Amino acid sequence: MAKIVFFCIPAHGHTNPTLGVVRELTARGHQVWYYSYAPFREKIEAAGATFVSCDEATPEQDLSPRQAARMGKDLALSTRVLVDVTLTLDHRVCAEMEQLKPDCIVADSMAMWGKAVARKLGIPFVSSTTTFAFNRFSAKIMKQSVGSLAAMLLSMPKVGRQIKRLQARGYPVKNVLDILQNDDNTHTVVYTSPQFQPCAETFSDKYAFVGPSVRPAAGEIEKTRDKLIYVSMGTVNNDMLPFYRRCIAALGGLDCQVILSVGTAVPLEAFGALPEQVSVFPQVDQIAVLEKADVFLSHGGMNSVSESLYYGVPLVLLPQTSEQGGVAARVVQLGAGILLEKQSQQAIRQEVRQVLEDPAYRENAAAISAGFRRCSGAKGAADKILQVCGG
Image 1 (cartoon, rainbow, N blue to C red):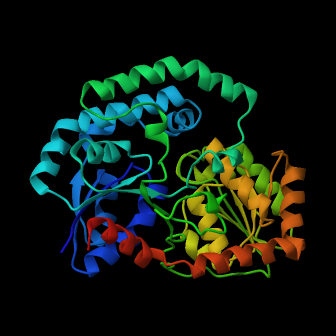
Image 2 (image 1 turned 30 degrees about the vertical axis):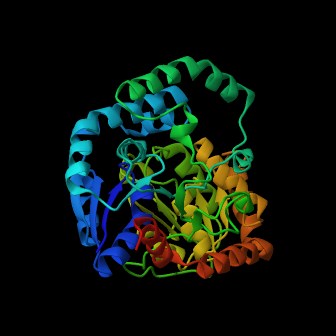
């Protein structure tokens, strides 16, 4: 029986794909400890793991929508936050790992404290990557503007100071790339298919592309029209009332059912009277909607895009961060969606209709879906982790 420790950041899109793997490992009789945060406790325990709180590090991870948006654009800020959390948890986690003596640490690619502790203590390590795997080849899809490249260069002295803080506490970190990317010798589970991963052939055999982890629908959505358009901007940067209103104005006149999931930052009464075929909710069972949807207007988060394509639903994409921009670029490259270049009512209507009416988008989405379904899934991820454990 193996002893396995997971570390993750406080984000649903990074936690959810790992839960099926945890269930697979515990079903095989292995023990799993999962370091996370209070809002995720129930679902982690339901998967069979022992929940371990990291809530003392919450102040260092002020992941409000505004802060999360800044972290997606500011390398110095994101590095400082990651280092703050690592050092806040340092003594406690190192002591617990030395006592527990796990066979393996599995850490989200953004939960660098897990990777850092594994390297510091010499514990076998697996990176859990819920976005695209990152190397110098795949990075080309994350196109950077001149302004963002200049900002990154200006931030390097601040980043260097954060690296020195880690080095002073005994962490073998040479530079920011040790934090941001894995080398070809790092065992890595990637929750996408080789077909969807950019430049998959450039990664070593240490990388296991296991496909997205998609849970079953918790309920069923009634489809009231021949076509169903789903609109959601995710769970973080979704305070977008003017945009939602334009979506309603643009799509409410089409002979389609329209479902908007708008989060809790926007009060439902702000929408007033709605067209008959339009429904607005704070949240929905996204899987249940995607089982019936014909087009998904999305922010381009990896989790949402993977779920959409798993069900063969093409996308109209409005990315809010560089990571989402990279995912959106890949969808467009593979012909399974289109970018929403402008947020006007006319542009929303035009792009959604284009994806609805051109069958090539759905055909290409179906091809990606077939690739996802050929992957080994949670079973393959568990096999990879146990291989690293040595059993």
